Image 1 (cartoon, rainbow, N blue to C red):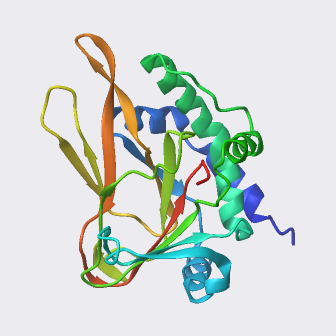
Image 2: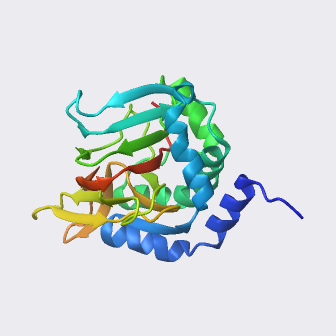
Image 3: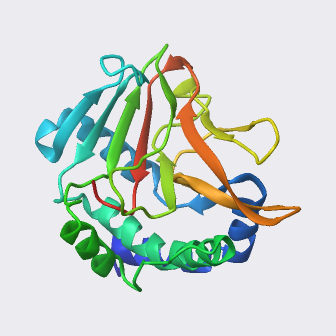
Length: 241
């Protein structure tokens, strides 16, 4: 029996994905759901890392910092294999969308062809800390609307992956995206994270067409109140802190 590595599985799944449809969904609402990327067993194993503090460089109590309620932890650079594999597999596909968005907005597109080269640029720019996140919410917890910006070097897209079963392991806790549209009131989107599936969303802003051409529409994200159970999620950020 041939064993396929997590890296190969992630790359194959993302290569088979309909990236034209995903890009169109990002253009329409600012986020897009991916096919299943992790098995239930892999999700369980990643969620269980929350009990291994040595795997993380920092732990953040959201209530203490008035970020909401719950906890998130930043992995060290010694990433679990599925996290490393997914991040590397996503990058070339997201890179094409990032460059397209930069072109529409008339912005520089500083991101090189490989994730390794981009992370070296981050480190040379003083952003050398791992920004991969494991999040944990219990009943009553929530996450305030925010952006994951850790310096001047920013990749415009990121991914969150659900690790528990929505509606079974927990209720509530929908992923929230709020977009401040040009010369209009804000628009909100709520998405339930299915176990093992990813949600691609914009880190800071995204291009929207207006009567005057393309404009940057600021976007923030967060999590609604968890009504019951426990919710874990994996955050993949493509710039370091």
